[in-house]
Length: 307
Image 1: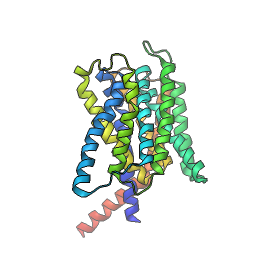
Image 2: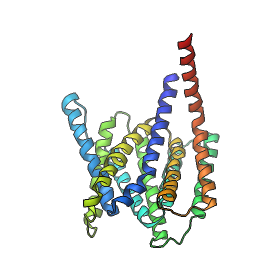
Image 3: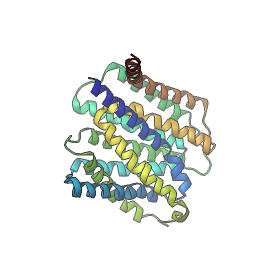
Image 4: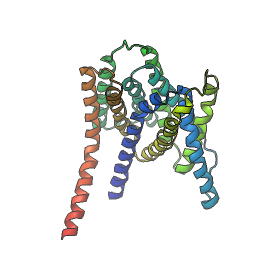
């Protein structure tokens, strides 16, 4: 029982770390001054080089299997399109809205999972989910719709498409066979994401515009938001349900909105702050049992050592 609690707590921490990395994505994308297509391709291209090298080394040294996994490949296509729509949303609307609408992906995934398993989630989790959803609605409704130089409606559409693709990725990851190793899963996901983004990249005018000055940000996108987020999400989804992951993922739009307000002076209305407080309260409520468990373990070890 203690091992299960510890594994679940680590999965929660991994999910929070992934949400924080994704929440900072708006800064990387905007500061790179590159197209959304190039940013999304860099995320999976650089990631594939790193993961591919590690996978080939593991196969040569330890005999790790890299056999094709249809579920991992399909989830890679889903996350590749998800990232492309996310970057397009960042280019067309505020950072908070661009991050908020993809956060509906885990919420949708929780619904898909409940339908597939034909069972209702615990009542407490449903209440937390409703609270997080109310916070998202408040942030969206109070968002300023007339931002100069941006196409707000188009950004919302891209964000909704991102959330839909994200939900497919989570469901595929949740129901992936346990025998598919972490390295094998990341290898095929990064390969599929990179292949899915070749066509949008080729169809882009001035494909490599701005890469001379933006390459450090592109590298950061590939390593941190690429390899880092994929690995953290893959680890978290092994222990968390889609509903738990959905609640924790609400941290992402909260951070993105704060960064947009702090770095780019984007307008955040009082109704939006109320929505973000509701979202944060669901994360704290979901994590408090594991936080108390961690504190009790620390105190028990400390008292045992003193005795």
